Length: 184
Image 1: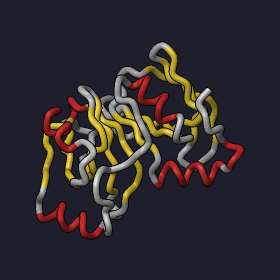
Image 2: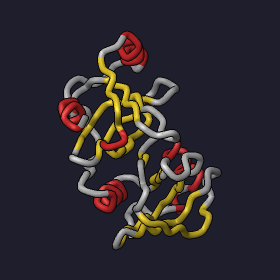
Image 3: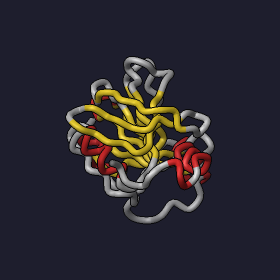
Image 4: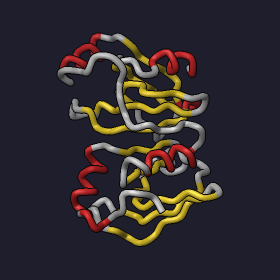
């Protein structure tokens, strides 16, 4: 699977990624980058618009669907897809700590998922700090309100989302004073 994902790295090909797990949704996306353990994708949302990025574990992906009639229709509906390489902020895909630190440099809010243990809940944070396998952040509620401090381990993390319409909407609701651009 890793070799297939690496072959799609930076290409402008819309694909479906099926993930193996009861709480793990499939993704319609472009593969932006791939390491041995992680894949960075640009997400095409169910609204048929481009909506941010996700980092997934490679080991969770069990199927890559390419070049189907449905994908061609979606690509046409997305409008003009830029020619050439898919661009995105530089995210270093070494490990979860490095990924989170590099995302924090470009995006103020990150959504964290532990789909294996709790597929119904996510943690949304700003002012994120990672140290020795522990994540600390200001928790953001789904209503866009700062809701105290959250602390959790990187263990069991299956996915992070950033730069999408959801996260950008929360930034607008929080306002300029609700977060700081750089992680602490």
